[in-house]
Picture 1 (spheres, one colour):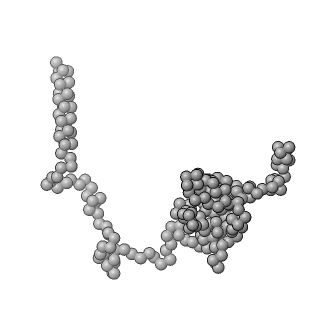
Picture 2: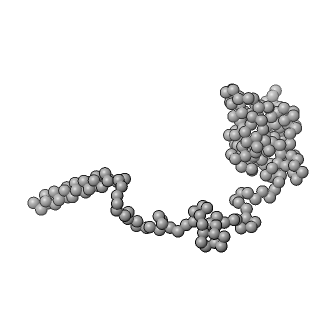
Length: 212
């Protein structure tokens, strides 16, 4: 008998709780004249300065403070003209890549080139990318003599600021990756016009045998 009464009480309690939650849910979002309950009011009414507001703490009354003299924003310390512009102190394009040319750099350059450059220039740099087949103006081939003669600093500058129909990629591609792309571009040009003399000696015989 007691067991049956306990079950009935439990069922009634669950029903009452369900009804209460339903009624409470229907009232959410409706305007109320009651003061809202704030368990932690500091998050809503914390003391803070807003832009252009008046300050009673600083002598000049301004809340927006000037940076400390000599302060440099993160990643904005451009202490190398060559690295950040591709030009020397005279404004001339530099010939050499300021980064060490190694396999890791070339692999990174290839990855970035395939992402940002190949849609127009193609993965081999002949100017026949997929965008050209969609009606985009064909870019020049990287393997033309006049393009090959361009300095590395010029390539970096074009990637940074764009040229003619090519948009700027200065915001999408960080500085180190731009130089990596330049390094990989030189590798593409070298491979396009490579000879047997460019192949390591230990591999030359294999190439000659494959060609026979």
